[in-house]
Image (cartoon, helix red, strand yellow):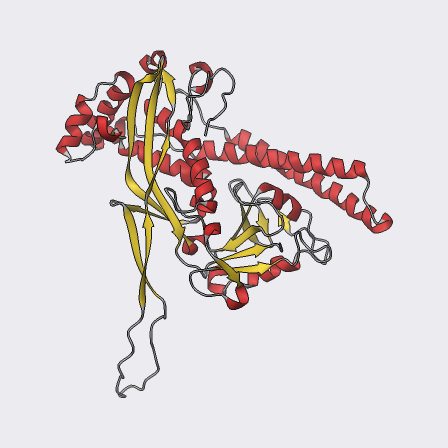
Length: 439
């Protein structure tokens, strides 16, 4: 797809997924930049808390109008919608500031002193990115018996950069953040599981132990697919010694990788991409079987007008107790906006803002994960997922991230074709349940 330009970035490059860095004074973050201060984060958290109090007041007014006049005033509805949008904006700002503050610096002089090989790799990588000098990296990869080369697929980034990219993705990619993550060295990860469960029985202390039947085993396979991004920079920027190249690479690919991963982990069809949990076969939870995700029917194309939260209670208790302990709700912003208005029989809101900085909002006591790739509430959609994603969904990362420098395709800009291999899929079909609205 073609990504439209923004600001002064210039024209898009054909159909490439394209991250740009054309204005170093605006886009580049030098080494000397300070992280978000605690005061900024505290101020954003206070703003978010005030926005939710205003939201509750406006919604209470709307509910009172419905009780007395059977309808709400248009002005009240518009006010509530504005506050709801402001609440989402405040939450996004709070999340971004908290994320920026929590990011550790990349490896510095002390790390280099502890690991000379890492320092040598970093120096060679900097030379390759800035000037295209690849002899240092080529020698290092030949020494490591690496099959990769510049003409074939680029050079490995330093370990510190790869770890930083994965750390950032864990913070900004919503499904990755709550799933199990396994790093592999091959092209796919295979996992055996028992379809019948172990055969067991009770025996006395001296009684004979009868032979039990062998469990029936099956195999699950999680191939790692190639994901890429292509940040661009001017040669003038690369010549600037103040620019931290390692940090620039990590920041440029973060948004591209997180966006593509997030979509694939939810809706991916498994063809040249991970298989998302919503791409799994589904079945009504009463007749659930392994290999499918159980669904709870909402009863209509929207939440019921009377006691809408009852279907959420049913969804929660469709999950076994062992999974509920670490379960989370997953939904998009529009669905969360609708649920934010729900109250219990005592007039208390079921959705609650984060109790402190760095925590998630909660719904009926369970964390809410906002994933924009989840479908909206509509006929036939599974708009809400609930489950223990640590046990239910597996993300597979192939070790190694590569960068191929291309100074020719988009002169005067230098492109950096950056690739990593990632896969994913459901690994425990009993750990995730879906709320499905009627077609």
